[in-house]
Length: 377
Image (tube, rainbow, N blue to C red; front, side, top):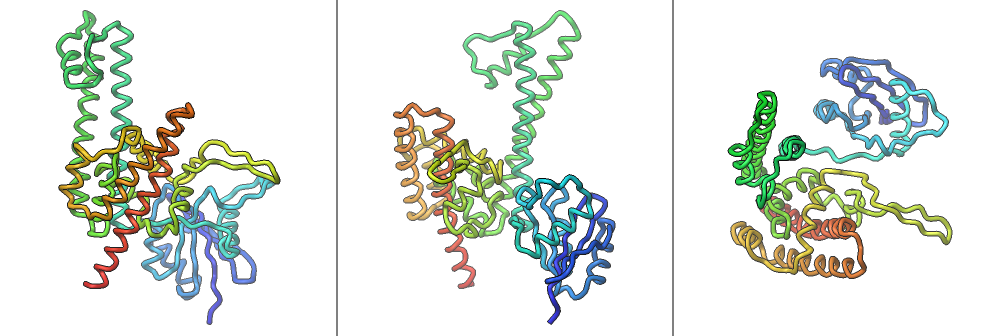
């Protein structure tokens, strides 16, 4: 049987630096190849039988293209978390060749941490959800520009809530300037606000359609998560697209650590020191969790949009039971923290972390059901 050869790849947009670590042997560079499918195919042919190769490269802006190319060629490949690659404190030389050799060596020694690679359905939904998030950020910037422009010129409405339909109508009807330059500026800022609003509406309709056309396994989890208070379809789609198969996490605690919502700790001996949250892992996931957690400051109830979601989606009693338990526990936790005069942002962050436990319970339950249905089919 051939010995396993560990291949480290330092990937860039145009080039790939290659290094190979032999089992129990040396680590040597194999030069640089173009980042093209034909070049990758030739490289694999030179390195030996695909069954004896294990490749890795750092997750980054080049995405998963190389991963899928290697997988289709029959090579086992893993994407590595860049922040968890071991580094030497005194190492002051960094080149593509040295990076590839370090990846190959550490991969052979089992010192690297792989990240989850989404399938085509998860990746497509994730890109769409992130496009909407980008549009929301653009909307905030556009509103700030227009709002600060009006404030600089002393134009403030009385009794109107900002960015409502009446507020925008007031700007278009009652705000005018004598100088033509200011009129052009106002028109441009208004046009950008309207344009971004149309973008968001278009993307939200696209998300609705994407969820309807998603594979049953993905759609079932998205629907079930909407039983939770503060988790509507867009939030549920974000959670599922960012996490993928939730069953890959052995426990809620492991999922909480992945989210970066757990506290930093630097303890030694009898001294225990904890700080703010680690903020490692997925920032998109943390954002939607904290947004959803604000809903639990209110007393538990199932009315309005939440009641309609649970009825329209025909959710199971088990899922609704978990969601109701989440409402009772998280609201009680909010009251307990508030009674101790904790900062509201800290309270909601803590609730977001605990909300992940209920998300894990619902998702694992639904994924188990879907697995049984596939076996029956």
